[in-house]
Image (cartoon, rainbow, N blue to C red; front, side):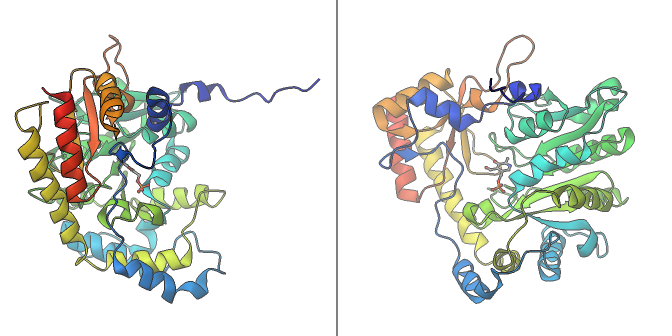
Length: 399
Ligand SMILES: Cc1ncc(COP(=O)(O)O)c(C=O)c1O
């Protein structure tokens, strides 16, 4: 008799990935002729730096990359963070407070494995917004934690304020994910909210993981970040980690390159955990990433293109579906009444693929899923394609 392996019970709680659910809803994966606005995968051509650096560093493919990257990479990231957030000299020690990541997703997942120790003899809580990037949920569940969904402070489109949670919840918390600019809503956490969240993390002894991978795609003003809030508080980087990536900033989701920066004790613990199996970043990619973080010239035009797409969206959709220009990121978050029904219609009638908001959120205790009325539309194609797609979307959904 063949005995089946016993899989861990937590697998049953693992959120189903949104694109798996979408393929079920729409009867299959994306087709080559469709307008795929479901996935946040920038379709802009990669900056010329990428091909140049990969070619120039081709002799390094035969090296195992060090887990902590190269001194040049760490210096480039520290320099970028310092310029971008106006950080005081000395706040970040590049060699102790920065690590390369093979994309933020991998880091966001692995951090839960690193910090989810038991609290008060029980499973620790992992706080996350709702709606949320589903990896936060997978990270919590597989890291041995319990997901705690925290709605927006003032509305479902808002950032959660963890500092306002009851002390008994915060005492059992090991990890809290923030996402600013938020996926999917595009709203930004202000400095005061970040400061309150950091103070709560330090008071109750949990880790604040600030996912800032959309930080460079902004409309009116550059979003503040958790490291800037640390600088404003003036007490170092304790209990804070920020995650960022080249996927959106430099339109290279396929490069799989990001970084984690913050509390040196947590960086050291993360390094030990990752040494056993997390992905490291190959040397030619580290060299490419170094050049990309050192270059700002390619980022402005990308941002301008997203702004132009928001202009088109505003012209076509303003006054309908609760349209609001996102402060950051490249998603429209449209209230269409029933997100699944709208996604199905757009697919059946227009070959347009969008994500039902319900797939990015979890129902609350009363059974209400805050994403249910919404669709998420990724503005990741060129301007003309985006205009065509939004015109068709607008015609099909009426409103
Ligand atoms: C909120 C959020 N965090 C993290 C990621 C992961 O991005 P990457 O691993 O490419 O850096 C994504 C990707 O879409 C995202 O939307």
